[in-house]
Image (cartoon, rainbow, N blue to C red):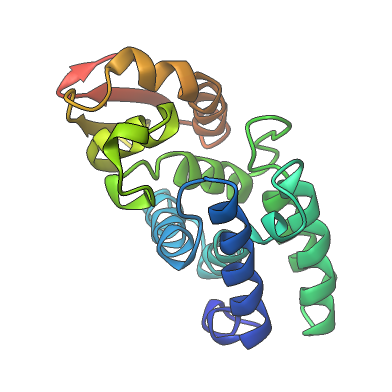
Length: 219
């Protein structure tokens, strides 16, 4: 059985993640490398384990989280679909069963807010994990005076955390923003589409999605 550990240690996959992130760096995008995919994997594990999904489903979700952005190697445009196709070839070559490949590829191909749909629980968990990773350390630009809106919003995010309620019927994204660098309005300007997809993903898991910024419940 192919494991998350196997995927993390696969040299070819590591190279694809590294080179995809280099492509994004050249275009001025925030970090999409091992820190991001590692955080996404940790969050899909938290979400699915808290909701009682089995170990195999959690393992597949972590694999999808680790590989979800490799399509940026091809192009940022439609990178979820490119990544899904790349992942299919890689996982098929590594001998993963067809039913597991289908699950992973579906999650990767549906994680982007432009075209994504939370078609199954693993896809939904990946969407929530990916879109919730807003943090200062993702910003590469060291010159604050030249920040664009994406730099400002990510740099302003001092912390972000996902929490499932005790009743297992809500999921809360809590973000602390330093308004010296960005306003709450700017956050919504670029992340509204992502938050709408998070709401749909939460509903697919039987949860209500809530957003809190600086202690103020906004959704």
